Image 1 (tube, rainbow, N blue to C red):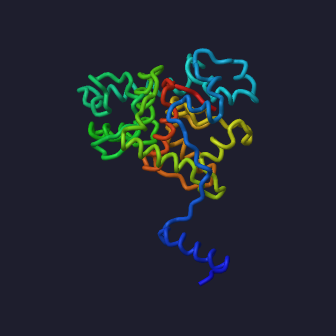
Image 2: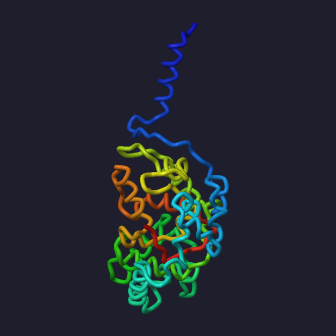
Length: 294
């Protein structure tokens, strides 16, 4: 039997439909990128890494130039910028107070994953696979769980939870982030899910994270210029002058709201997967806490 061109199209469409579950939501995706899970991968993406790879030797002339400061990827606001005092330092002080209250026996630090009771380097290993939670989890989610074991509620996304996270992270300032998203099966799977979510278009404006932070880097978005996603995870939780203290998951929720998308709760699987993805893109870059952003 000879098939017409139109018949072939209908058959092809029917076969394509048969491969998709009838209850699967419709999704659109930005062109998928193959990101190198190390901060040096930005040499292939925005090519701005050469300007901000060394936190101690930034070109401050760029910081004062609105047309060029995007090339510094906001690293000009990392320590020692405004080192005297800002909201991030107050948060770190608050976090230290709460940490000491919870860690009187040393069990809180142990629960967080501290080695021999020391917080040094702990932030560089988060997010991590947590057998007790049976999933990969970010630092703030683990803080909530471990505080609960000590009889205290520190809800993920709350100021006090993020303050403890800032304090814990500050003990790793200057140490490079190092999560294994290449050979650790749980983290590798989370990284790939996060990469896909990063490219998934959602919401009223039909935007994906990558719509701006991959395909519009260096271009104006209202009053700001879009920067690279590489190295961003290193300064969270961050003090933002508009919203006070902000964990990475709260930042995701803010972006969802800006794009007219229903935000998720901090600690949700989707947000954690994106956190793993972005943290993988920060591998090799030093933790920079407490930091400040506009």
